[in-house]
Each structure stands twice: as structure tokens, then as C-alpha cells.
Length: 418
Image (cartoon, rainbow, N blue to C red; front, top):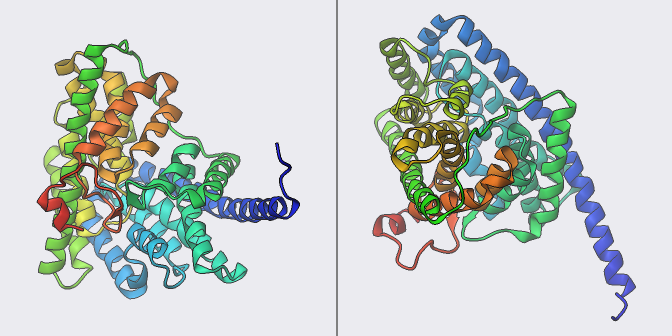
């Protein structure tokens, strides 16, 4: 074996040292921001559950969030899509105001009962805080791309407690069919360290227990593949409906603050009519129920509709946790039809609907293993890949590009969107 030349080895060592150092700073910033956000979110959720009448103020809260973004946040209105666009085509550093604005907007949305998630907030905070190092370190465009990806991975990891999935998500989410291996070291280091930072601040993530497993056999694999197709179609429907409603509201209502105000009216009236807040907020309690007992077969639809209204009209938060809810309850509902344990299919739906809607099958498979243990690995692979293939090329992130089509002849409607 030939000895490794000294100069290239030294350059590699300096490269590793540089990016490990930067990634650790990103992790400290993103992990701390996510911890503060999760504590604030927990408090807001507790207050809303203590005083359910707060839902009546949701239209006013929506108007306030819309007005705040109109006055101070038009440059960062794009959210996750802005970060992805900046990675694809770097132009200028993301304004720092993105972090406090999305944090405040999301906490207010949850306090008054919007049906939104949390991943978008953590990712935007992580990306915006990381990008500020561009000024400090005077990084070129190619390094800035990597820096933003590390921030995305750190934010995702710290809010869900899934470090490896967070790193792979940052590499996978930018373009369908392509991973960005040039950023693999910073993303892995930032995601793992950010999760540790969150734990050091006292963050505790929800534990989901799978109560029963089917044997890995031909019949169970076929059933999981069929379920994966349904999960992919559900993810596709969610993404298309959310984008369609958002476009409709922007065309019909010129004054931006009125859009979430009207969405708040619809959600508040729906909660009043149902007499329950089961389909608003994060819905973690219902997700846990989906692993423990059979649920009403329409829970996934109720959550999906209120989330589409909330996000499509302009409330801040994220799509991922609602997708977990939709997937877990849909899997729970399908379990008797497919003769699979309901907690197992809830776990598969949890990750597979997200895989299809976000076009991130690898991150979703890894997340399943991190959350539910290695036994789910083969089933998660089948469900997430099937969901990914059947969800089309339109996902929850508009800025996501198609590097490689999922199949040889993409549908005309998919091509038209890219």
C-alpha cells in the first residue's frame, strides 16, 4: 500500500477540522433555539388546553401573524422554500429576523388552536441562525450552501430527536433523486450535536411504543406495499390541496393578514361544530393513541382538512407533525383491512406519509428505525419507497427540484409543475 502524501492528508485534516468546528457552532445555535421553541410550544399547548375558549380568538391571532409578516417579514415569507432556494442559487444571507418571526408566529398559531406543526419553525431557525456565520467567517457561495444544509439538519434533528434522519433529510430534501454528499460531514456532525444540545437543555421527546409486529413474510410485505401506496397518495393529496388553497387565497384576497384571519374563522367554527380540539395543535396525544388502540377511521381526514386550511391560509408552523398524525391515524384505520397490527401500521404510516409528501424516503426510513427500533427497518423501507413512488413529483416544498424522475415517464401534471 502506498503511503498517503503528507500535503493532501494535511488538507483533508484541515477541511475536517474546519467543518466540524463550524458544524458544532451551528448545532449550539440551532439546538438551543429548538429547545427554547419546544418549551414555549409546550406552554402554549398547555394554556390552550386549559382555556379552550382561546380558539375563538384564532381569527384575530391569524390576522396578527399575517400583519406582522406583512410589516416585518416579507423577505422571509418563503420559509423553508427560501432556504432551499438559497442553497440552489445563493444570492444573499437569510435575514436573521426569520428566526424570531417564525418562532413567534408558530407559538401564537398553536396557542390559539391552528392545526400546524413544528418542523418548519425549527428548520427555519436553524438555517437562519447558521447563515449568519456567512458574514462572520466570510464564506464563499459553495461553503454557504453547505452551511445552510447543516442548519437545516440541525433544526430537524433537534426538534424530533432523530439525529441521523435529520442529517439525511438535509442532504435529501433539496432535489428529488439526488443526495448532496459534499455536505455529509457538516450535516452529520451538526445534526448529532444539535440533538445533544437539546437534551442538555432538558428537552424530552415523545416515545412511541409499537405493541405488535407481523412476521416478515410474503403476505405481510405485500400488505405493507399496498399500505405504502395509500400513504403516498395521501401525502400527494395533502401537498396538492395545501398549495392549491394557498394559491387560491393569494389570488382572491390581496391583503395578506385577512387570509389567516379567514382560515382562523373556518378552523374555529369547525372546532365549535365538532365540540373537540382533537384536530388542532400538534395532536401528539392522538398520535400516541394511534399506537395504543383502534381509533375512529376518519381521524386522519379531520386532521388533514384543518391542517390544509391552517397552512393554506398562512398560519406558521410546519407540515411534518400533522403528516405524522395523518399517517399514524390512517395506518391505524387500515390495519383491520390488511390484517396487520394496528400499532405497527400506525408506525409505518407515521413515516411513510411524510416520505411521500416530502419526497425524502431515506430520511423517513432512518427516522423509523431511530423512533421505533431496528425491527421496523424492512417494513419501513417497503412502505416509504412505495409512498415515495406513488406521491408524484409535487411535494410540500415548492422549491424542491427534480434531479431524477421517479419513473421513466412522469405524468403530465407533474411535469407541468417543474
